[in-house]
Amino acid sequence: MYVKQISVFIENTKGRLADITSVLAKGSIDIRALSLADTTNFGILRLIVDRPFDAEKMLKESGFTVSVTSVIAIGIEDRPGALAEALKILEEGDISVEYLYAFISKTSGKASVILRVDDGDKAVEMLVNGGITFLSDKDIIEI
Amino acid sequence: MEIRMWQREIETMQRDAIKELQLEKLKSMVAKLYRDVPHYKKKFDEAGVSPDDIKTLSDISKFPFTTKEDIRVNYPYGLFAKPLKEIVRIHASSGTTGVPTVVGYTRNDLNTWSDLVARIVVAAGVTGEDIAQISFGYGLFTGALGLHYGLEKIGATVVPVSSGNTERQINIMRDFGSTVLISTPTYAMYLAETAKGMGLEKGDLKLKIGLLGSEGCSDEFRDEIEEKFGIFPTDNYGLSEIMGPGISGECVYREGMHIAEDHFLAEIIDPVTEEVLPMGSTGELVLSSLTREGIPLLRYRTKDITTLIDEPCRCGRTHTRMTRTLGRSDDMLKVKGVNVFPTQIESAIVGIEGIGSHYLLILRRENYMDNLEVKVELVDGKVLESYGELEKIQMTIKKRLLTILGLDAKVTLCSPMELERFTGKAKRVLDLRFEKEGGR
Image 1 (cartoon, one colour):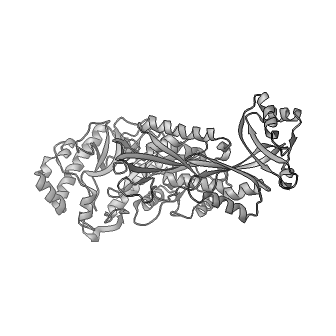
Image 2: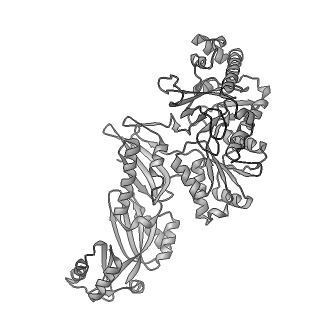
């Protein structure tokens, strides 16, 4: 249902992304998924990793602004139209998506979608009623 | 509330009596300068003035100013009014540009100085029961030794830890039970951050009072120190050329710093036209020594911008007060024709959620136009959930800067601890307007 996501603040200066990933590499943190969006001034890197709280601690100690939050993770069929069906459910519930990123699992052949919405609990309820499969932290790690 | 004073009789003198005392001392000081210091004799002769011209206190305006440059060209001892045999201590200012300014103290000067510091520390609420940790750098700088002897004089336990090694400072503070901190406001904030980083809570330290002088700071910055560190911060003012700390200091009401007018005569001038401004005006503080033996200075231009208040204070002290300095006229920046003091920027950023209290101002000139960039640290990850939140923070700071300064600034967020921390006076301005920037 909900999985832990790390958000890291990045200034738009050369090498910051490499710095962050090096910190995680040193701590043997396994990155399962990531998304980076930026404006002209700064960016926010969002990561799903195997040990989120360890990763948060390491990044904090290296001087980054970090937070760990819960986001919705769902698994959908890897076929045209599957994402549209899931999003339609949210639209019908008048829920807006703040951001979203998706990736394909090597083993299950399913697509995983990470979602952040304005009303998480309502979204979960709608998705459950719509028959959508949720992923747990454990599922994500095992992808 | 019982108001404690170190020299009550002097500190609560009637204003007329203070003025009378000042006039008497000024007359003899001007005569002494003319007689004992060749530099002053020459300057007075050139200006066509003589000691007899002092009939009232305002006659001082006929006399020439003394500047830092005058002290430098007389490096090292040229302005001393006593032979070195009678000088028992030398101090010098850091001299970030060029030759340091050297000052000398006779034994009487040191006694006066420690009494003046005793006045300001007692005014701030320090007693003989206190344990005072001095986190100013010891050495030629007057801050540390000045406070040191004043605090010893009132019987406080002095811990001369000096500056630097911040974790050790905190350990000493905790283990020794320090109740008073002497440092710059910036360093106090850094100590508070470090203590928090070491896992200490407010109650783990016994600190009560902070004598946070030697650099200007906004009310907001000070309130934040008070809140984070659980200390009562007070400001005091001094400059090494005139004496060091002890020239003025706040009492517990913190409604201006009480100038020791039995030793100094204060004027406010327009820093550009050099005209003396009426009581209550804001301008550059000019100080004259009335009692100094080693190196008395007449009409010394402090470059500090302040306002004088001559009504007696609620605490009962009667000497003229000066408002906390807005900054040095040297620190004043002209951006698109607007006068900007770094402390004004500080008041725009302090208290915004998620943002730390350190900042850096970067000035650039692009297409013959000044551009102001303000860099602040994003210290709290809570706002990372949406761009909207981050952009809102940027907009809030931008709007506040526009309100306070009337200037449109670019606001940049950066990671915590990215901006440099200073143990002494903070350098918060990077002026690139007159330099060529590479690679842009």
